[in-house]
Image 1: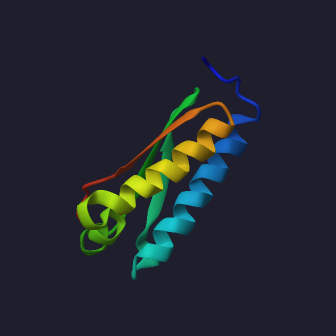
Image 2: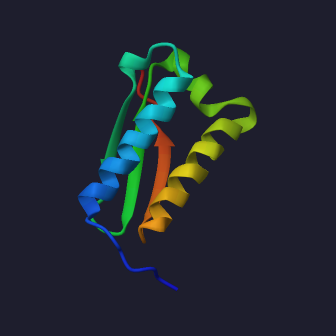
Length: 94
């Protein structure tokens, strides 16, 4: 069953981006270097978190529990508005 999109997509994307930035920056020490980029223009959004290599472990957590919790929160937030959201941490080195 598909839930209709209840809000403007740009508002939903901004909410998800702000949520991810808030959570990610709270978890890492170098919070000025964390960025979140959202891709997708339809009912599916991909959120990409970029963080320094030394900080990525804090975002992933032991056995991936932290990133799974982040994904659950973002997915739930998106589903309330009728869209799907996926979160990934990019492997760029900086």
